[in-house]
Image 1 (cartoon, rainbow, N blue to C red):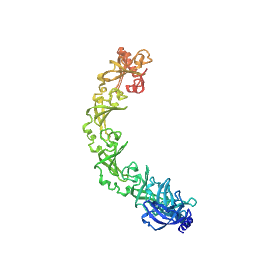
Image 2 (image 1 turned 90 degrees about the vertical axis):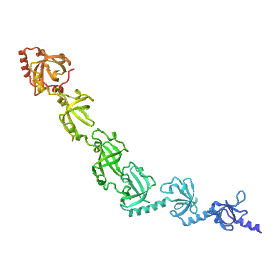
Image 3 (image 1 turned 30 degrees about the vertical axis):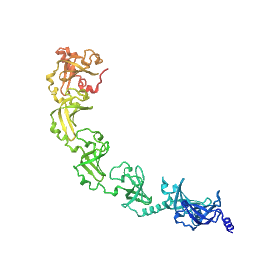
Image 4 (image 1 turned 120 degrees about the horizontal axis):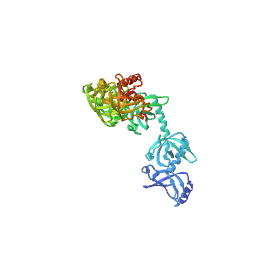
Length: 549
């Protein structure tokens, strides 16, 4: 009778259905059930949340997958029974767009498996706003999810956590845009960093923190102050509700260091700071965080010739300076390093009075004169016009060269313009003041040809005075080229036939060297009648004429 009854129950079991079973034994890894079949059913313990809550004799529902396996034992599943019931329940009560609570069971390729009563698939892209790199951190966690798609044929569900988060952020964003105002201080998380600033998540609303609003001090890149994921307090600077944009400030959450700047750094005060930047025109010095002063390149030294600040300073140097001025509105402080020491030019009039004889080394030559170093940083300049009484100097190199030690006379001192004018010719008397003691009309002189031109030849005479032998005064015969008769270095005898004090000119004649008094008088008179155009001064010739080949 019992066998017939058991056979009757066994025949009533249908594969793919949910059946009742009675717990007969609870083991470490399995739960044994009596399902009225020829053999007992075995359910793996991991299908239960906690086997400690089960009791022998308790009736539970299981899913009958197969009546018999290879060993003749039935295959049952508690988990699949729950899922089948839940799937039917979900189909009857849940639509796409519904919100379900579920627990993340495991990580799979492309996402996570979530138990929402049945197994649902959560794609990695739908886990959070930013797809996470580590999916393991979500396993075992319980969240709310939005149903994206239900496939009844395949019995699968695709869900999203991201959409719920975005909806929540949207609500918070609208609320923040409605309520926040400039001046409010909010807590936010650094979301992204760029070259020009950082985007900060204000719990649903992204705001831009520009690099210029990060610090009162100098920073080159936002990453010097912030890192992604960091929580910071920021001040709302501007709200554009139409465009849903918010400008933020970090430095505004602290006091502006430029307030009361005049009291902390009064004009003429000595201050200390660190060089933070070098530019061609000067050095920026940080006096405190957010406060920098500029030492212009001209304020680095009284005496050294500094072309760029990098010649004497480097970034990171600690230096002292004097406050020259403050422009609070423009947030500028002018500093000076040279003001720490006395200005040597203040003593120039005393040290180098007009008329004093001085010595120095030629430091540099220009087209108009020579600069002479009298002491470190103090130069005097000898103009070409003050190099010789008797010669027209076209370039100072005709008289001096670089590094020469020379003597000179102080002609003028201008401390304000930092200029000292020197003269070399003033070391001696002007020979033209006593020209009559040196030369007279008719004198027979000997000299050396120093230069030939198309006009004639210049002859170096005593006292450094040059005379000009005009081409017409070289020979009784007509001469086409001066160099056909005279060349530089030739020594010649000539007669003085013209002296012009006002124009500082001396005319010579080679052909008149052998004349008697009567012939000389006639030649002199004839030469006078040539006019000033024929008696060209040394300077005029050097300026206008070129040497013959």
